[in-house]
Length: 125
Image (cartoon, rainbow, N blue to C red; front, side, top):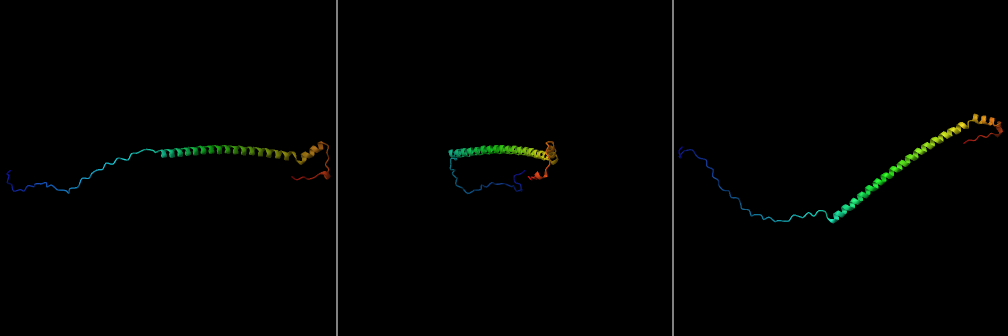
């Protein structure tokens, strides 16, 4: 290969591109804000809120227990009323059976009593 060839060579020539000169930015060192955690006021507020929440929970539980015991007493009273009503109905039925006319008339005859229509009064309850 000879040096004088008629083929063109592709040469890439790097030309330096000049960019505009920017002034350097100076960095300002600021100290990071110190995270101080919880302040005394915040601790006091959290404490007060905690005490109030505990008190409300305690009162709520106390009221629930009171309501449950009252409901139990009400159920016991209703049960007692039902038993007494049943006893009263049974006694009323027994009174009706014992005060039948033929039974009273039979007992009067055994005792030697006679029926006198002039002395009989009708009593209505």
